Image 1 (cartoon, rainbow, N blue to C red):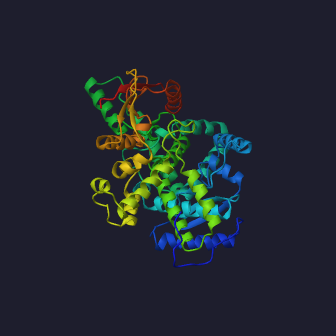
Image 2: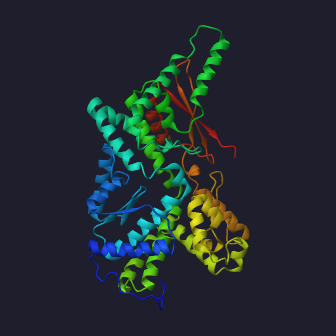
Image 3: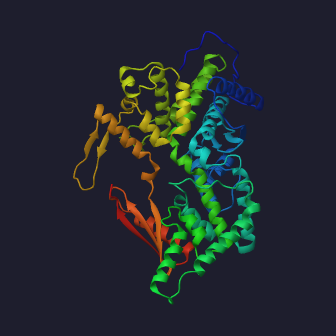
Length: 502
């Protein structure tokens, strides 16, 4: 806890646990003043929504968005979360924040006033700044248009249900949702979504897409003619498919021989939603670390100025500590490195390195050690890195020692485990490499690509995946994935597994 400053004393913003809207506004203004004038954060306009526990459960079930199309899976998730909540087996999040312009923060009405202060600083300024400044969100998402696009998606899918029936629409949505993790562009920048004009451009876009698909299948060479001509025409058709393709939903939307125009548009909606959330999967440590650092700094600043009471600050620190708990590796609660704890620890450490570096820090971070400008260092990191590159660049021996990190090798071919990274110079660098690789999303999800389509024969679609560390795909998941691809492609689908050469 930061000691109170001897200057800038003022009266507390609140003294009771209960909140009202006047107190929320007064506290929000004080938080915003620190965020803008001290930390110099750049944020979207804020919209704070106070919601009930049932509304929070509903937000859980529909990926947190205020607008979403209907699907049975959302109700299933709602009932599951509600059952655990009513039993006391699971609590609710204090807040949910949406990457939109304005940035919408849901605050639970059951929160006390100290918690409302915590979540406003955390979400409305920490997450908000990260959403607006980080390069992945800036390049791949359209915060200004996402709510309009979701409204369009909801109305479009509801219209499809009226025309084609709920069952047929759910069949497409079931397959699209199952393939959503493989319906994003990972290695090339996706095209910007035309969110504002989506409905107006839909008919023109779909007509062009249908024409392209029919043209593709109409011009498949027949059995007549020379073999050389057929091969040349076939290769031209495959070049138009731009194989290999990593985005399964995009390929099926563009080239499936059986889908109708409304079904293709539903695939496009689902993959656009999946793409919108893909940057969040790549920045979990940074995003939560940024939000925790911001709320911790802002609230300690307000406390030092006398605007928070001792009781309020103790409650805030209690919740803050719970979020940052890191169980030991042999604790039954351990499920890996807590991204909140790691991100916050690294950002606090960056400030320490800038202000009070040790000799070790000067060796590891010569560009920032002792320079004092920790605000701009952090803002630069928040804007230009994602989890694996942030860890690779800024994880220090101090943090590794604090978390008692070590690395082990547990190859299946060996009958024993080997400790490969300990607390020495070589071990620190190895630990940093291992942890960065562990937070690289490309190493955590299967890399499945469409590599060929038998246009002359049985129209079999060929997929390929590369085994990482010799580990094959889970059999049940692989069969389920193939089933959904076959449902959208209309013909046989096969997948081959190759061993990585790296």
